[in-house]
Image 1 (cartoon, rainbow, N blue to C red):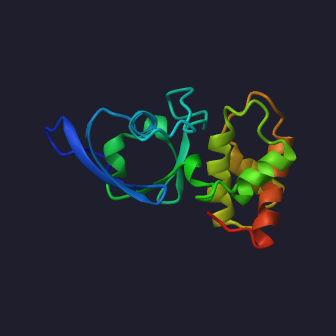
Image 2 (cartoon, rainbow, N blue to C red):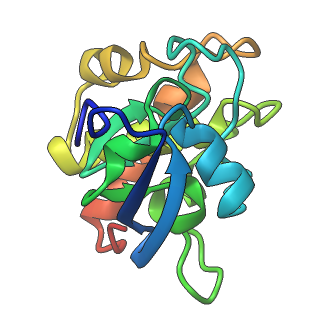
Amino acid sequence: MSEQPPEGTTESVVAFGLNGYQQLCTVPTSRMLLDLLRDTFGCQGVRGSCERGVCGACTVLVDGVPVAACATFAFAVDGADVETVEGLAGDDGTLSPQQRAFAERGGYQCGFCTSGMLMTTTALLRHDPSPDRATIREWLSSNTCRCTGYEMIVESVERAARLLADGGAQR
């Protein structure tokens, strides 16, 4: 990820992968990734909430790493692969193991934070396919949920790990 736009420019050409598809666009250097994903590419599952990068609602994966889209400049993803919640389900609409687990275990409550939780869960399970509860809670600490005490979310992550271990396709 690039951390600075080219000196003296007001726009940047950005080429990046989005959920497996190559994208090319010109963006103002002040444009945030959250706005690019929602407004230009229709990724409405990427939610804006705090606009400071602390609540986790806008979490996406950039080269597999969870980042706050509201605190990341769009030009910074030039050359990167970006994954949003829209890319988790199969092309035929089949839910990913993570999505299925959240639905089965009720880990979504109102649903506002769910997309960020799902993206953090995806990164966690790629990093550690069998996390213990302490590891799950540590990873989820970057995502704020105002509806639960996180118990059903932790159970959802545990269920997703079991589904993946039983042959569920990791997306």
